[in-house]
Image 1 (spheres, protein in one colour):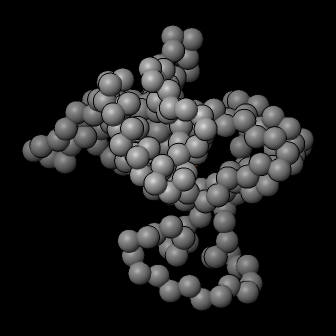
Image 2 (cartoon, helix red, strand yellow):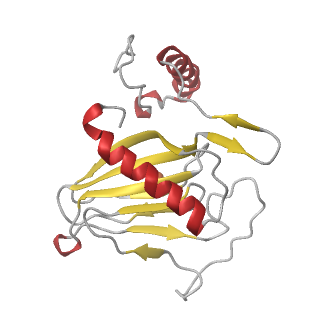
Length: 196
Ligand SMILES: [Fe+2]
């Protein structure tokens, strides 16, 4: 959403993120909150998204661009399960055999034009979508200044050269595992890798 045509939408999202941080999370925001990255998700029939969370990010959001649950567009669900994707904690997975109020995903019912904000570490995804053209914009937010009292740091977007260097470093490992086709190169990358 760096582009000028998204400017008003981006400003509004950043204002909502500040309200969420201050009034819902109760956090001190030294200066402002910025969108650090964003992307469209365009889902056809049968699309789904595995449970995941967003690293290196403070808040995340989903803006529902084309969304109508009466046409089969599936809602986003959230999970507070401690056993899923908490890879740095030991976990004991007992075999679940019954859905209760305490062990299942919570769907959040949304409407087109709404922005759904949540802390980035919360696990989320969606089940199989049943309608064409479910379109959302997803984004991450960081405070412009992250502080914990006497010290802090300013969060800035990387330069294009820095982003490409990080991408190439990551691509090296992905090439090793044969998964580099799944990586999205930085927007406007000058030396695009061979799609093969
Ligand atoms: Fe996500």
